[in-house]
Amino acid sequence: MAALSPMFYGPPCKVPVLNNIKIMTKMNLFTAALLAAFLSAGCEKPEPKPEPQPIVNPEPKPEPQPEPEPEVPADPRDVPNNDGIIRVLAVGNSFSADAVEQELWPLFHAVGQKVIIGELYIAGCDLETHWDRTSKETKAYSYRKISDESGGTVVTKSDATFKEGLLDERWDYISLQQGAGHHGQLETFEPWMTNMINYCRENASYRKFKLVYHVPWVAPAHSTNAKFGNYDYDTAKMYSMITETTKKVAETYPVDIIINTVDAIQNGRSSYLGDTFDRDGWHLNKSYGRYTAGCIWFEKIMGQSVLGNPYYPASIDAYVAEICQTAAHEACLHPYQVTDLSRFKDPNPEQPQSGKTLAEWEFSATNAVEDAYISSFTTLPDQKSSLGTYHYSNAAGVLGHVSSNKQAGGRISFVQLDKSKWSATSGNERAGTMISATGLPSVCAALPGDYFLFETTTGEQFPAGARLYAEFAWNTNKYGSKYWLLEYLDGDEWKAVPGFGVKTETISGKTYDTNVPYSETITYNIAFAASEIRPIKAEVQLSAPTKDFKLRMTCCLEHQVNGRHFDHPRTQSVQNLDATVQPKIMLLD
Image (cartoon, rainbow, N blue to C red; front, side, top):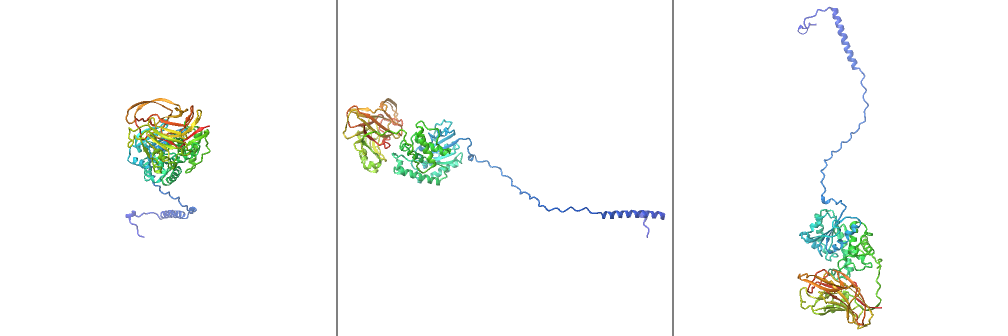
């Protein structure tokens, strides 16, 4: 074995052999120990492997959610009122005035419900005119408002636009109606009904209001109103046309509530009150007529029965109030039909006069032609086309008469003083006579001294002590004369009919058209109200023998029922006999 280079290990060692053996031995032992340790480490028993675990699918990770969109605030016009007040806006004319102005607020007030009632009013207005005024923003409306704040009284703003009233409150209910007598004629609705609905939805402060359609009533049988002519002066025909039109309205338009006042009034007319719900042949009277309309509006809007509501106007008693409430309630339960209320009898029926009928009249359009009293009262031909046409004359004397046509023996005449200083050919100073479209004797331009005369014509001599009776009905219309004196002939003397309260009064003021001061002292026993139909029943006892019975009603002053005074005849001042009480003269037992 070659010697190792000293470069690496240094010079060779001189070590004894024994020592070398010892060193080798020690090295061998060390090597063996290392090997044993190595082998020992390689032969150690391995750690036991853990038992295999079942594989569990991991929970699915949730899908990432989109970021929530920011909340869009609600349109304030869609947010309902939450103050407990009901707000009702009626768009209409005198028919809506009859329905909501007088009796509706007290009905709500009586049950503790706060209500604000608004009305956008134009006289005689139909849907076409409403749209014209609305779309042009014309200041044509009388905006009327009733609330707790006003104590239930009407507060009026004249010369308002439609939009002013629409935006004045956040109305919960907005009512539309057809006017001018067209509520039974569907062909008159479009496009104006749709236009009005859309305008209200687009512009209302609360646009989720409930849309109401108001259905006015049928004209009374005795009406002479020209609009009644749309239905040939036939109440049954008018009712049928209105109800059929209303059904079509319900199908055609997005109406939420139909207030069928037409049915409520017809129901009431089937009670003992009869055909007396009007005040002038067209509008409702201001007692049970308007109250009945208020009752159905209350029940439809409030959503609770009006039966038992403690409020009713002072002009009626509890029994009549019950009739009105029942008429309205039945209309809500049974629309498009008349509910018979004949079970409501007159609690204080007048005993019919006992005696002999001396003369009796029956006015109607048919009788006017067939019994030839058109010509006798107006000189016009006895034909249907003459109905509703005036014959003008300012000459003194009997202007016309109607002989009794149900039982012969009497005559009704209109007698006037000389008015020849005013023109009878043109202008509004003409006096005249007319038989109305429903056959009623009518006169215009009455002056003091003009009179209606009711008389028997048989020449019968009535002894002193004889009791005589006459009855008829009088319609003042809007502009008829206010003050009259009712007298009868006793022997040769005209006397005031007892029981009518004779008054002597000085009436002063200024004439309406010329502004001239006047002051006149008159004696009268009848003072009529505007648009009043009043039954007149006169019973007298003669103190002297008298040939034929004569009763006259004389005009006392050229003062109209609406408070206007004139110093000349006025053609627009019209009054007529009315068919609610057909004229009769009797000799009592």
